[in-house]
Every structure is written in structure tokens, then in C-alpha cells.
Image (cartoon, rainbow, N blue to C red; front, side, top):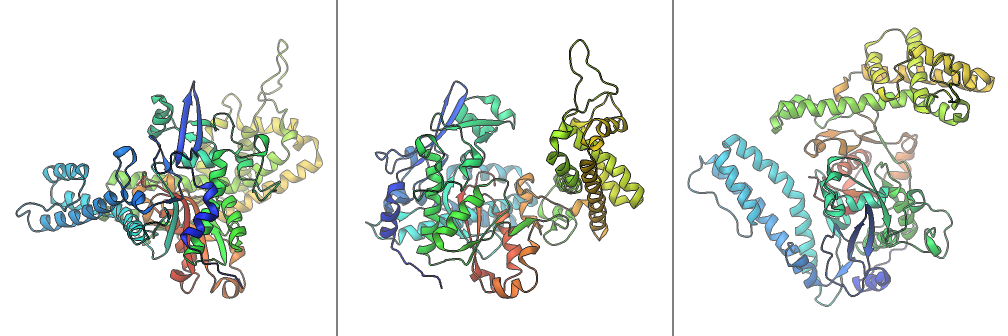
Length: 581
């Protein structure tokens, strides 16, 4: 039986007061080097950083949270609350005005910000009735989530006592569901989250403000970082649970201490646990959305320690094949929702290409794992026939990716002889043959490269390695047959998806898919669902939330298995941003 601890916000303030002085991310750029720190100057209190991309404060007083304007210019919470509410009212007013044949003048609600009003003035003049209504309906969808967040927070803070510290977290329904989500912090863009997860920034126009170098925005090249003006982040160590001591999760930085960034990560865990205790939601199980970073796993393991809840790693998995539009219809039906022919074509191509690439990855995985496991046996394969040293220079060698590519393409040719011609195998073969052009050697035919691999690598020199290779080829053929059959089972490539990263799609499309994530079979076999999980309470965690589409999709995957998802599921994310919606 779990022991429930109920705490006041003053109690929580005293629990974590040693770690609440940070107020935002600070970026320093000097001579091509970019550094991140989380400012912890205790003199700052309620003031915020001039170029802050995230507010990392946990507590504030009532007046500060409701009315403070960063630098005297940014909107306060009260401004945001009034502005979003006024925007929604205005959008509905204009729709009704258009449907009433534009009689009189459209009504703009009090509190509407000048920027929104200027845009509406222009659209009313330039768009016809159908275009204007379509524009307004999209604006309503974009604004609803912000309005809900600001309204919930405004009401919660307004009802607090004047002299008590108030936590700054947000709470809202995951879009399209009745499941609550808590976000600990608020970001203006994802640079801060990227810096934590990857130790680098993604090059974009937001990066210009940090680096002052406009060329960064023209490339997606990663921009390396240091923490606290000198500590190079080791991402593997950032999220390592090794060498735990003195109550801390990790101590692998200079002098056995943390950087301010890693202190922030651990503070987030304490903060998340405190909120769940405050609202009296202690989950039985903690699970997380599939992620390419280790942040989710790190956070969830340590949160489980704080709450005494079990963390189930790998609970969700990315679906392999049968992702489709939420209503099961053809992508062409998106026309009814205001998407153009070109947008639909881009959407279907993205989905199709991602599906091909992932199926290709899954089919080829046995070959890839075989080569990488035995990499030392493949380091001396020459890239040319009868290669000999010339003028003391050794001949070029095939790289490991090139060797994997050659073996996979040969395996595909051999598998066809066994499986026979099949149009779905041909779908997979398109990617297998053409997607890795960078790994192809133009001056040497594929069969000749294969001959060199067999002659100069472990395949030709070690019976043990050769047998492992044959086994990998058999797995390759089995995988090819498996996914060809899945494709033929009522699906066509434009519906399928796999290893799905929701950010690969334009934000407007993200709410129109289902079955992107499913629950791993190991968690739903036998009587497990009926016994262990049926009446359990779950917390679904993700590192950050933008449109809410990822959380919506994992909620759907879990909700369909539970009898009362509304009372059995809660979501949490480290930070919220509306910058990508």
C-alpha cells in the first residue's frame, strides 16, 4: 500500500528552496563558442533574463506570476489570459459575421492584442468567405490549447493566498483527449530542450539570437555547446545512473560537482514529484513516450524513486506498419479540412518515405548488427580489384557503412531467388537499393565489391564469422518476407509508417494520425492486462510538448486498453512550448 503525503505549497517551498533560485537559460557566445548555463543569481528573484528561452523558476508570489512583464514588454499571465480569451471570442464573432453576409462590422472583443487585430484586418479585406472561415477555424484550433493553459493557470494562481509561494507549472487537457497533462516549465523555443538532450543546438533562425551568426539558420548542422563556459557535456554521462552517491544521481563533472544544467535536470525531478503529491496523483506505473534521447529514461527512473512507483522501460514502441489517418480515410479527404493538393502530396510522400526507410532498416538490421559486432574483421577490405600499394600509398578501403550496404543489396538479390518476385518486396527494394547512394562505390560494380568483402574480410577467413553471416542472411530473408506480407495485408505504402518521429511532419498534420505508437507486446501478453494493469494508475512522461500530438497518440494507445482512462492516466512533460504550432 502506498503512503500518500499531502503537502502545502509552503511545505513544498521549504523542501526544494535550495534549488529554486534559477530564473532562466543564459547563452554566452564568444569566438565561435556557445555556452549554456541556468542562471542561479539569488539577487535576481522575480526578474527574468533578457534573452531567456525558458523560465526555470519553480515558485513565485501571486502578483509576480499574474502581472510581471519580462523587461516591461512581454505579456504577463493576465495579459495572455485576456488576449487568448478575446482572440477566441473574436474568431467566432467574425465567422458568424461572414455567415450573416458580412452585414455591419465584425466585432473585436476587448483585450485583443494589436498584432492579432492587424492580421485580422488584412485577412478580412483580402480573403473570400470560404478562405476567411478556413483561416479562422485553423486559428481557433491553434489558440484553444494556449487559452486552456493560460486560463487554468490564471484561475489557480488567482485563488491562492497572497503571502504564499505559488508553483508555476501548467495544467491542461492533452489535445483531443480528456487526459490531464502537467508541464513543469515554459519555453519560447526548443533550443533549451535540445541543449539538455543532445548537448548541441539545431541550426535555425532561433539560433541566430544566441550565436549572432546568421549562417547558422541556413543549415540544420548541429552547433556544439559547453555548459557553464567550459564543461563539454557528455550526454551519455548526463543521463547515466552509475556511481550514485551522496543522494545525487550522478557526480561526473569537475571536482565531483554538477553544472547548473544538470542541477536543473535533477531539480525537475524533485519538482515533478512535488506537484504529483500536491494534487494527490501517485501513479502505480510510470511510462514514457518513445524518444531518441535518454532524458525520458533518466527522468522517469529518478521520479519513480521519489514516488515509489514502478517505471516500465520500453512500455510503448513505435508502430511498424499500420499507422493511418485517424478516421481511416484516404489522405485526399484532408481537402475537406482545408489542405491543398500540394500539401497533401507532400504529406503522403513524407509518410511513404519514412515507412520505406524504416522497413528497410528493420529488414537490414541483422546484417548491420553482424558487421558492427565483427567490425574488426572488416577493416581491411580494399575498394578496388587486385588493389596493391602504389608509391607507398595503401589502397582505399571500403568503409563499414559501405560494406553493410553491399551485403544488404546482395542479400536482397539472393532473397528474391528464394521468395520469388513480389510487388511489395519491390517497394522495400526501392529504398534498399537507392536510399544509400552515399555508401555506393561508383568505380566498382556491386558484385565485385562483394567479391572483395568475401575474400579479404572475416567472411572468407573465419568459419565462425562465415556461419554468423549465413545466419544474418537468413534473418534478413525472413524479415523481408514478414514486412512484404504486412504491406500486402490490406495496406498500401501511403498509409504506412514506422519508427515514427512526429516532428518529421508539418505541425498541421500531426493531429490526423493514429496507431503511431502501440504498447509493447511484452506488456500485454497473457493475463497481464487483466491483472496487473487493468485498474492501475499511469503517468505518461515526455521530455517536452509542443502541439501535444505525441502525447495524444500514446494516450490513445494506452486508453484503449484500460476501462477508465480518464481516471487512470495523467501526463507530464518537462517543458511546454507553442513555438512550433
